[in-house]
Length: 162
Image (cartoon, rainbow, N blue to C red):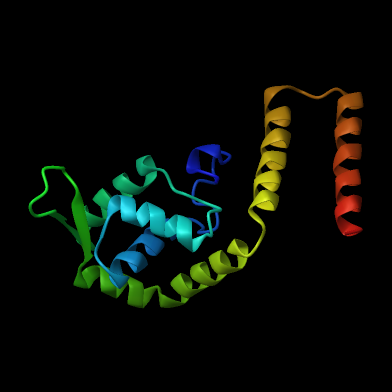
């Protein structure tokens, strides 16, 4: 299972696009009121285990949605824990209505990506991270650049032959 922390910087909402996780959470809350952890699990299920957002990403976003009046947060009755149930508000429903085409596009893209074998997704992310780290940590010599180019070109050829 990939988590938000295993993703390259700048790709924290993989599959959703900029602001997409916000719309996904609103949509899930619109389906039914949920706890934060339930939302994390729902996103993981939606992506067939390809992505599980971290609590450090979800809870601040939920707090932001509450502050914007798009959802409400109610303490769970009878529980000593500080769990909150998040419920959609009319303003949140309006955002979903206004962004309906984008929401459908996000969910369609996520459903398509979720069909891919998870081991392939993991390998792709590891490959991209390895290249970024190699290029970001040092200036390559001409020989290293040529070798890396050869590795990348060979990988492309092998994939095309599948």
